[in-house]
Image (cartoon, rainbow over all chains, first blue to last red; front, side, top):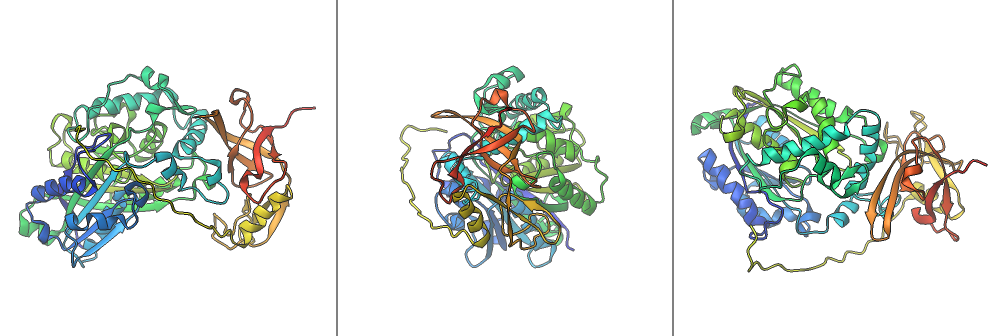
Length: 364
Length: 143
């Protein structure tokens, strides 16, 4: 299996409403930055894996709307309709397999353009569930009540993680400024779906993220600054109502597979970037991935995580981007000391049905 | 990031669908018109699903034969969400002795709810082959 490295990272500024740009323009901001970082031209890319969701983009085959900016004419573009960390594992396997050498991984989403309740409701089973008019917040509220009642998450500590994420966001130049809050402000924000409050959900966001990934021979030929992907795994769980809220088997299986590929024990990462749309999930996932809640904003989610403001689809790839910048020592005010190994996590689906875990290191 | 001269087009995509229920889901939905709730037991692993479904969520076996179940639920979790009508209470309900839970609404003051509480379905006067044939579930009052 060929070694694969990330050699370029780019992100747009993520903000609640990027009304200044259309989808392709939003994505181009990240592409330009990633290509410049990698020191290559768009024409050098031999394949692309894009991530987007039709219902958010308001058109089907939404990847065609970005075909020009990803430079996929006469090239192998493929697309995933999940969190873009799945696109990375797909693109990684293309190069690891030896068929491709230099790939673009792209993610974009504007949560501001559609009706989020209607988009989320469309994901439910049309026969048994959809007519009841549920959305992601309903699933989160049902899961959170069980998690808090049975000690898998803690109401106050979950709120504290939201406050910590917003403080971290102030050190992350790729997210728009958010109002600073304390734990009490989270707990007193309007009801979302009991026991959750509106600030327990990651803020609505528009943004894009792009990686350039390359084979080892390409890394050498380009004299690039590589961060090596040493493990990558996806695991899909059961449908949300078939899965107990405390059951973390899906994430555990993705973690175990990625760590085994990397040859790590579970606690060797210097940085762990965890993706979760709701505060209580952040606690649950952090525990499985070995992140220490007291390190929030430090070794655990130095970027602020999704609660700093990354949209769906993009959020998991933003976790990877942060890990790459940390390992390269380019994370500015949020730099973690001696960041040589990192874990990035992404999640997709109702009630976090599918998880992906990627390990990265300074050496292959 | 917000400029005053931004041009924003407002459009709506209208996409009507006709969803085919398929044999097993049809048997479940038809049962509702008779105020009957049906489940499916996996012949391979024994997993019992309510509502009835065509495939076992545990072992992926086809589950084709349905069983009528007792119209009794137990409350696993609930959440109250703001709504234009005031608020709604969604719940995860374990129906009969199912191994899974089902989403539905509960008609009760959420402050009176307890995990494991027994629930019964409130049927609409003239139930149709839709999940909304059950208006909501409500706690069974002790007599």
